Length: 361
Image (tube, rainbow, N blue to C red; front, side, top):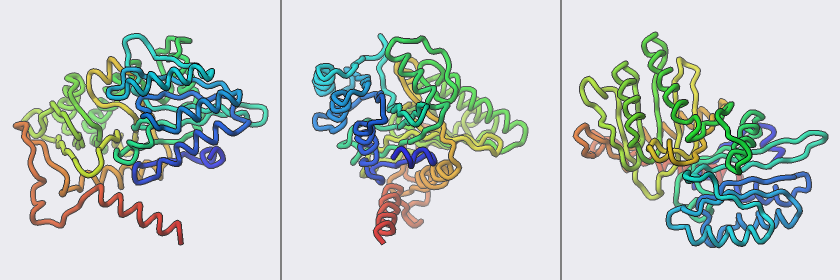
């Protein structure tokens, strides 16, 4: 996988893409004699996960292995404590993050010697390193060897292990360091584009929206005329469609066979579109009290897929989707009883089936 990632970034969309690509990436790192170090954030592992045993094997192979384990991952506390004990006994450098902050980011860093230099490979995702939940949660992940993202990932792990007090990053958006300020700046930029008559707009998919400051920023953008389309599975305190406040904002919730868990952020940016994926919801706890990691997606083809396939499918959904009204109630998409049904999750399953058939042929 290292040769493939070095050629260009890869995006995976679970469960429609097999989680084997993630476990294969880790296993290749474990068994590759050129790999010197593996650093990983583990939030939800589960009792039967193959990933902690792989890290144990890496340590036994003489690699430098760091596992940041969140002991307060709800419902997985017991499993994580047991894995922490076993990893520590195997010589893995086990750390528990920063006092007062829950580590929720999903990040793996692999350091590999290539010739006379070191090359860094990363996997950054919205989902947990748990192959079991990957079959029932929708998530996105990015494999990249981008040098600046690699430098950021290295400095983030230094921060998490107490070796630095990081105050800025080149590319990554990290809570509570710079994520809120960066999101504010991205929205402010859309407001400026809108006022100047340039292409402006925001499409974002995440799980919850309850941070008052972020909601206020969305309202500010709406009052400036920026079109904002939000796909929020659960709690949403923002009220869309209120005259003079949020007239340009729509909020849709999609609840289907799989638990919608991916986080994707799109900004029109005057025609120079930017897309981000990562672990963060727009909740005060995520922005202030958790370590969250959001990464830009640079590859044009991957950006097009996220915008024109993933986000577009959720915006088109009129089968499993419900619209949030300005009074706080949810209702079916208007005209869904008359129009042809479009189920976003069924669409992705169908696309995955066609791709597997094409690969086999």
